[in-house]
Each structure stands twice: as C-alpha cells, then as structure tokens.
Image (cartoon, rainbow, N blue to C red; front, side, top):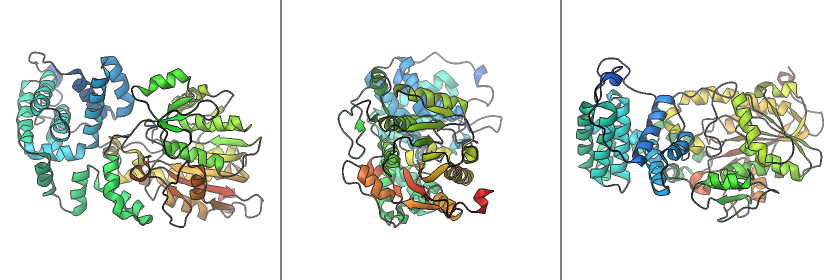
Length: 513
C-alpha cells in the first residue's frame, strides 16, 4: 500500500499488527521532567505574557505534538490544520517543510539536542523537545535566519510551558546555533559505536531500517545504491495524480511510466480532485503501475470477476473499477474495518456502476468465496518502509517486532486470496515495503504450500505497461521491486501468481483443510 495513497491504513488485526510508536511522550517517570515543568502539573503552572509565534511555525509545532502524543499521521492532520489557520500558499509551504523535515530527521536532531543539552533527549519534557526539534531543523537544514528560529521557538515554549522551560530552550538552541551542520554531524557521529550507527545518525534512519534496505538492494546486486536510497527517503516527494482510465485524461507534466500518471500542477491538489468529481485523485505512480500490471497480466475476457481483497482506503479499488468498467468486468472489494469500508465506497463515487464492498476478514475470504474470482489484488498491510518519504514519522514508529507480527498476516491473506481464485486466475501480491521478509519471503512461503500456483514474469508485464523503459533489476525471480531513488515512486513490491487452469495439482492437504 502506498504511503501517498494510504497513510491511514491501520496495521491492526484483522487488518494488521498494531503500530508500536517510538514517538510517544517521553519522561513519564513522574516528578520533575528536566527541561520543562513537573510532569502532571504543566496545566497548573502560571504562564508569562502571550508571545507572538508565526502561524506557520505554530501549525508545524501542533502537528509535531499530535504525532508525538497521539500517534497521528502528519499527512492526515497537516492539511486541515493549514486550512483552519488560513495560511496563504507561502506559509502553507513553510509549515509543510517544517513539519515534514523535522519528523524525517528526528533521530539526528535528538542526538544533537542531547549533546547541546548535556542530557538524553528522553529526559526532556516532550512538549519542549518538539519545540527544540522544530528549531534545530530550522537552524541546520533551512534558510531561516538563526535569530528567528531561536526566538520563535523560545516563544513557543514560553507560551505553552512557562518561563523556566523557555530559558532552558533558549540555552540549548544558542549552543546549537554556534556550530555548523557539518560540525554537528562530525560531533554526533563521533559517538557512534559502528559504521551503521554513523550512517543512521547521518541519514536519519534507524539502524534496523538501514540494514533491511541494504539487504533488499543486495538481493538485486545493487547494495551500492543504499546512500542514494536514504537520500531519496529524506527528499520531499512530488505529488502525483492519477486520471482514471476512460473517465479522465492525464494532464501535464506526464510521469515517465504509468500512462495515467501526471504531476500536480501546484497548489492544493484537492481542488483539482474536487473539480473532476473524483475521476482524478492523488496516487503514487508505483501504486498505479501495480494495479495496471494486474489488469495487463493476461487478456481480459468479458464477464470476469475481480476482487480487491484489502481495499481500504480505496485508491487502487477505484483504479481497478475504471478498468473493469471498460472491459465489462465485475469488480468487488473487501475491507474488514467498517470506517475504512466507508472510505472505499467514497473513493468509488467517481466511477459509474456498482461495486460490492464486503466487510469480511480477508484471512477467511477464500473459505467463504472459494474459486470465485479471476483476478485478485492483495495490497497487504505492511510496515510501509517503502513510503518513508511520504510518511516521515513512520521510520521512528516501526520496529522489527512489527515485521514479525505482520508477516504471518500477509501469508494468511495471500493464501486466502489463492483460495478465492478461479482456475486460471491471477493474484497480484503487493506491498509498499521492500523488506525481504514481507516480499519475497511471503511469496516463497505461500508457494511451498501450493502445487497448482506458478509465477508470472511481473517484470515483463510491467515493462509492457510502462510508457518508457524502466530499470528493473534482474534476479531471476520475475518479481518487481520499485524504488524512490531509481524510479521516483514509492518502493512498491509486486508478484503475480497464477492458478493452473485445470483441477490437477490443486492445493495440498493443508490448503484443503
């Protein structure tokens, strides 16, 4: 699932594993939280005079607080916050850069703040720490004047946490402002215990994520692209739109691969979407490509029955519905979470015709609908490591434990999809993660339990769909891994699995049971 299309997908069962946040408030030990007011008493502390804070910085700070306190998704809460504050385009762009940039590089900034404060970041009051992070980003990664970054951040702390906390913030930020970004990088990397820790501090990625990405690149023989990938994760991505086929025409500038993809002309893309009645929407080019690949994997016969098994919030569902409409195909969708099922129905409003939306557990769908569908999309819940540029807070929330919990779910969903597949039918297994356990590992595990399933060369299919030559690594598997640094897309994974057209070699006894 693409981070651009769906930053809202919950990783909770029956849809997936619950998020484990490393961004929740620190300093819950009770007593005095160094760098702020006593824990549990901040609301009772007298405040000094209200100080003026630029609206863009206030919006960015409020987003950081919501992410830290409530596990909020920045890209879901930032647009309404900008609208509520009535920011003009220039201030809206500033608020976006401050919020996203601070969240992306949080780990690096925490190391710098800890060095400047001479105490661990987790011992600093969470509200003060978020203000320090925001200011550190401005001081070290933007053209904002140092005095403005320091003064406004101190004012933020004073207005919310009191004079004592603002004095602490002022002292820390003055120390940070005295050294250049390069000097701070050298200083914090000097404390690293390994090369990977140094790279983690430099690139603002957790060590475990770096190692996972390195392994995925190495599987393609391209481990030397790691630095380029990490840089791409920290760059602000372009907004990509999809023109639903048969219902809208793509505008300019066109994207290089998906025939339906083009770049946002600028400004608020939701105005463009509203003006088209839903026939144009925001969707990463990688997400467009994997949906196109399922449709192009074999000639489409009139009367086919298709399924989007894990449909929420419905971006790919609408894409498939538009294609199905052009070919006299019936599309159905499934989303177990009722609120997300409503999002799917809303996403389908721009496509004429009816799409049945089931609300069943996808893991048992193959039992309740055996052999019913000719093509099935399994856009499985995943860690989202392929969309870190769009979900800046995700890298600090996810842990290896999330992978361990998600993989069994992914296996169950793919097995269920194969159970719902008609003879000769095709399943597209998709994740927005390049982690090998979530991609190749899941496919190999499922193939071990089926003797009637073969892989289609997804690379050949995708090359046939693409409008221009696309660089896909050859590892002999036929599976596709897209990359931000190589393709300008989210790191979408695609495998195409086809059931034999005869009943011979049907599922083994484990599957029949």
